[in-house]
Image 1: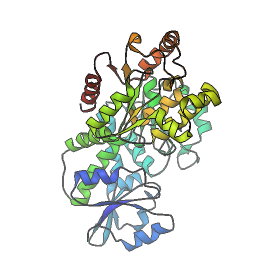
Image 2: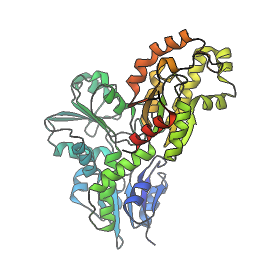
Image 3: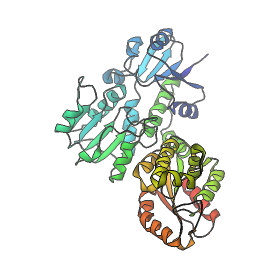
Image 4: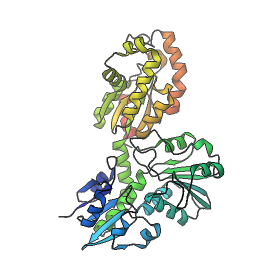
Length: 414
């Protein structure tokens, strides 16, 4: 029986199964291996072909009978094919990364490039950076040595980096609130690339975009390297067009739809309609908070004040940011704290439901801050620029719910 799959230490975050099974007609298994299990698995050779991820891309090499020239030069293997009992190693991270760089028009030639991390994935990226003729490549890692400098040395001498590439797992789900570097330190920065693909946009990538810089996540690289791995698995050639088609499909399915806007702007009703049209789960964040706290929102305000409610709201934002493929209607004040939006944007497309002030409800017992027309007007003035700032799309809701939901659905299906 033929057996295909992925080995690594922690694989719950992996998209590889759905990618391979979309490209090829075989079952692809996720096979997490502990350090103790890894040698026994490799010695048994009970597979047809496998991919390899953290932390085994270098560790597999002693078990192989042959390695192609590219993988040998890189010093890491992410694809192994069992040909009549002989294990042959390849590295498709290299070409996958170059696909991502070129797709987004990012130039590495004559640039000062900072590579974060020095593991198996980094080895392929370093080879690609050399191939692209960077003026200088600096590798920084938490463990100094093997060609990598410390973060202290990086901060002392290399804040003029023009391109930053993260090959470390920092920022990967479930620790998606982390970033390996503060981009504010890098005054010559032109672009950021991150090989992490879960979440769809890491904090590092979002920070780059917030600074008006190109920020690219690792999903395209993942799909591109998987396409080439399938070619090795099946000894065939596949058109590169499948990469973009599959990338867009995964992004569309995995992304959450985040609805922001004023209280009574229609987020819940519109969200329910969008979820039904797109076959997605609907989540009302205020209802989620009430369920988890066991108290109504007015009760939370009465017992803990607005600050207590905002703490519960941030907890909900962090938890819901880890979901995929949901429509999430947020509370009106979600944008008041940047950390909420930092989390929600990692796996989400943000829509501002824009409803005119004169159409908003000005008194609502379930909304403690909507106590009068004057209070709602003050909130509107306080928040309107934040809504616009965080929105990927602004959708008018001054006609009908159906028209607004249809417009959102059209944007999602582009």
